[in-house]
Image 1 (cartoon, one colour):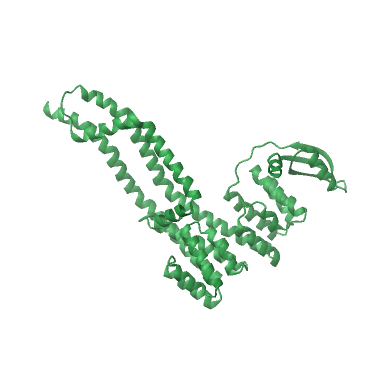
Image 2 (cartoon, one colour; image 1 turned 120 degrees about the vertical axis):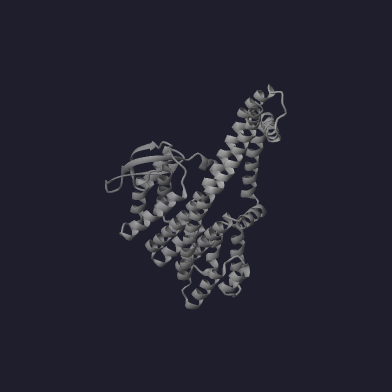
Length: 403
């Protein structure tokens, strides 16, 4: 408990001073106070000239920030820049202060004797097991620059897939939200005005008009319950979706069976699964061990369970091809490619080709989905808004015919 409280009171400080050779040095570090930081720097042989608490203008660290950092670090190591200097350059040049503090913290850990893998493992929120395992493999094999480059490429491709999925879902979701807001405004403000007008006619109204007016009365009387129910429903749904394993499994299974989006999600999941396993295997991570990272990177509970099943079968001596067949969630083309890769001893290359194929399939599916959704959305909106307009003008049309 005391440790947690101490961490909560840490602040970020910038400092300047001179090292043992008289060279001017400066940096940024987290500490519980200026005195504590000054004592630490003196133990490092630095004569402190100035310590200042840094302003908090930080933004959240995104996966895009981590991907950019990985690419920059890989490029610098390839160019022969020393590791600590590379961290210093990237940290000082980053536009997000949170990323700079994260990198300086990792740099400090490395300076005090931690390996790069151990330093990254202290920040599991930003660096998952896959990331840390690849870094460890690169350190032990002396090919850190190559592994970082492979890791950066992997992250860029995974981000591209996620971006395509989000762009495919954003358009229909945004249209549905806008349509609901417009419908609510019409029901609450516009139709009551028509109702007052029609009450002076003293004639029977058509059934469609009465139906729309009844819905409007419900909206006017219970708008707070409708909006509260929808907001509460979404909150409850996502709350349990994050915390309930059975619900995650159910929703992921339903998502894969949707008529339009299901195939897109399946292709994206297989692309991510293949790319992750290819990257891990090419880095020299043992196949059984690699499945721990692959399961988490799949992003779908159905494929998570399938990966764990494959891991158990492979660890007992079954081939990867047979284990994948037994899960019944992989297309035959994927299984055939894996079989060829196993026989030829080029499993990483075959999995990479599978990932390339399904990433291209995702691109095509997103384009087809966008083209398909536009006319569907136009028909739905036209029917919804047009139906309300026609229903409210029917009494006026009938009066014109009588006159």
